[in-house]
Image 1 (cartoon, rainbow, N blue to C red):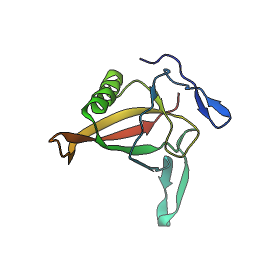
Image 2: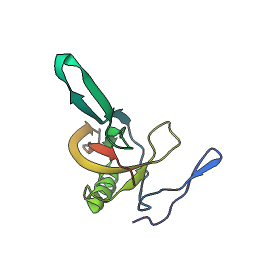
Image 3: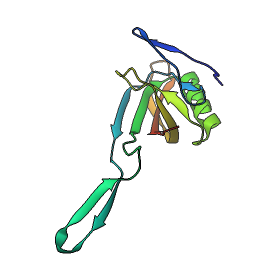
Image 4: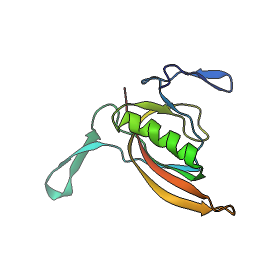
Length: 134
C-alpha cells in the first residue's frame, strides 16, 4: 500500500486527502453521472418545494474502463481494488483534470479483450468509482 504520494500537475502539487492510496493507472475511458441529492416536499395543486439534501449534494459516479490491458496490469489493478474491498477511500485524478478526487470502487467487472497474433489474449476491466467526502 502506498502511504504517501505527491503528484506534480503543472506547477501545483496534489496531496491525497484520503488514506494515501492512489489509483495511478491510465484508463481508456471515463465518464460520470451526476444527480444532485435533493429533498422534495410535494403539496396540493402540483406545488412542490425542493432543497439540497446536505452539504455535499453533487457526488460523481464514474464509469471507468481499461481496455486491452495485459494480465500483469489486470492483476495489479484488481489486487489494488480487492485490498480496499469497496470500503477504503483512495485517490484518483480523472483524465484531463488536475484535482484528485476521494473515491471508493463499489464494483468492477472483467471481460476478454483482443486476441494477439501470438495467441495471447488481452483483458478489459470496467470499474465504478463513487466520489466520497472525507
